[in-house]
Length: 335
Ligand code: ADE
Ligand code: ZN
Image (cartoon, rainbow, N blue to C red; front, side, top):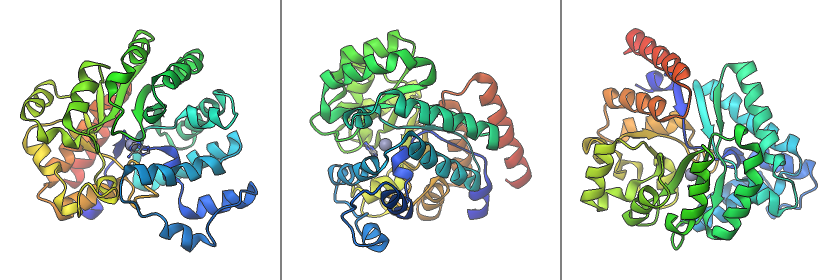
């Protein structure tokens, strides 16, 4: 099963670029950029990758953003992740990177957009990996900032696959951003949102009703609301579940306690992703293996979720059918 999962062609739909910065990468980049890092060595930095909740994690995650100083740094971080994708046989990936952080540091919006666009162009050329870039509004900064972010991003909309909503969730429901996401939709950009990661099921309803999401990041709290589960099952709205993220952020005490098997049982359109693989010490394969080895999820369900990830992606129909054929062939040979 482990080898089957490792070699299976995969699609990743929920991964934050700075969350792929291993402590070693962070350390090297800090030294290159003369950033006065507040840890005495890599070991001490690694030790700090322990979190009691989402808020504490976001504070640590910001360290990576402060150490990145050049467009080339961000491009390099992306290329390190793409090399990891090759190792993990990730064939298509849709990644988050928020422009606001870098705009607040004084860089122009195209700092992030050009770095990500350049990296995706080279990932396709060098490795045949497809995908795209999905900036998020940083919800705890509020809707006025989100509006400004959208104004900055719209001139580059051809380089943006989707816009999401991320960061500290509780107290910042999607409804606060209703008018801004209306403009996102009017511009023809896909809409996604982190919802029901820490905050209750009503945040998922708000993502559906107020901002018209096409895909939900996390969504695990949906199980607290029967009507919502029925609705999500009927609509087959894709939900990107990140098991080790939820364990690292103390939503579950252990991977064996994860609710993914129940979500599958209830007929939800779920797939597995990594969120911030370096911080949570698990890339995509490790997340799938963790679930397969420690819960009742079967090989058939692992394959079903791999299909769900393809179908829930924003890839073109032609690319989706290539990815589907590749997966089908792999299962036929190895299943
Ligand atoms: N940004 C990076 N990782 C995140 C997560 N798990 N939830 C919300 N925002 C994030
Ligand atoms: Zn996330």
